Image (tube, rainbow, N blue to C red; front, side, top):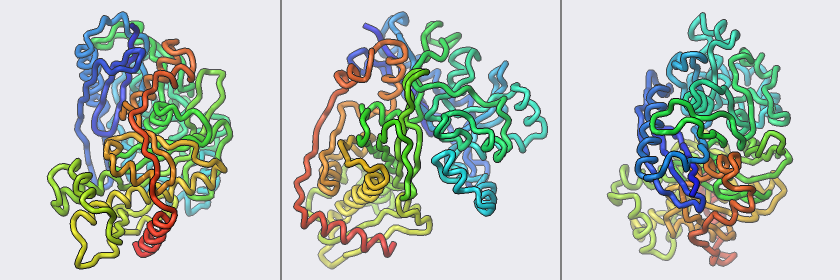
Length: 493
């Protein structure tokens, strides 16, 4: 039996899964690392702490799996996508802390570019909005922070990359400086059509090409392990994708029109649009989904995010004290047949796609003397589902694809009532997989394909396992009433 290791390097910790060829998880360990907040709006990570967390999780997961190291056929990586860092290409020592995707220190830089009328050109070339969320402006800031860095970066002495690039360098003992197309597409430095670094974008952000990683596909052998604690030398590192693209692949969303939603603190929806780059008139992001093999075609996706999903449940727990454990919301919301006309718009951090109203705030409408905490709990779940309806309607309009399937993952996907409400509001069947950690599963799939553990996507379909389907059972009249109430409340938020 061969085994595939998936490294899921996230914002607060690193998780490693050891899977066998039938997708059974035989070992799993998570290791957290500290968050660093130097100033308001600044968020950093110590790259050495990230590497330490990966090593702890690797050793622990392999130990738990009780496998012979010789059976490890491949390693795949998925990662927080827009976090960027600099390191010395020879010593592999970090130059400074990584700047995290949440960091807003380059907001003024992006606003100045927007004032110069550059936003449309950036969007045309990258599929992204001009925002400090993405890592291009972070690199420019790091090079300007220290007068010597720009010269060292231009000579290739300093390496820049997203977390995947850094991990490949560390895992391979410095043998490779690469990234994959999905992560490169989140830097604002890559041309989304050619899938190569764009000279005009490098000039715009004042970034030298010499410090950037080589852009490779999402599934091929990039390098082999060397000197990694607990891991034999010579294991192929053969799969990389940013976290949301990895989840799309891990959900076996291989056809145009197939989509997934990852329910976490927020809700992240990606729809596969095939080999044709999508254009969005609805404020959605166009992004690279993946590329399989050096000679394979690139696949694209539309991406939309709701800022608040699971965080709304946490607010009921921590802010209002309606229950002590988040899991209790399902039973509480199930005490009533409907929300009794209560609508909650969870715009606690503004409204994202397709509304893009950063100044919107959360609102509850429809309260009466008969409203109970159960009605409010149910309204929160409905609000999460209704936000996703808006995003998916925009995706259908932009892509020209009807929704072929909608797969779900993430912690809140375990909530059966939420999943049923989502099916009812979308009027679409919801499919929940047996493995909710589809981000790691996608990394394993890509690595296994790259190393020959699985021969093609059809074989992946056969090993992917479904847990449950949720079939819509809400009448058209009730659905329209829900949508009308939601739209009225969103207008007031």
